Length: 151
Image (tube, rainbow, N blue to C red):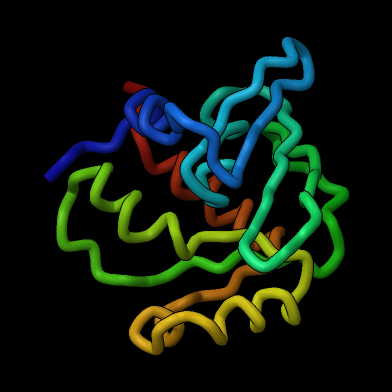
């Protein structure tokens, strides 16, 4: 089993190529792409930096943007939800996990947009998608980060 450390997760979630999820450090202006919506929520918790998160989820023509800091304080965009597939993890290989899960981990501005997207998914995926409010998703991300050793 792979031991997940905060350092290893941070190195992994940074994508070498542009994705639908971008984080911008509000102090330095540095921009990083991350593999999925959960990774965008993890980023400020792992780095200790306040970032602007920009999301381009499937089915939307506009970019969703909000600021998240390591303290994870609001205000939160009203009605936003996160889709996360609770699919079995058949490997501890980070790349495989990203390939199999990231296409289904997205932020949406409301349940209506989420449901439109869900309707196009295969039942074997759709039936396993857990929906979190943005507040719940950030809380869940914090619990995950706190469970990982620093390095």
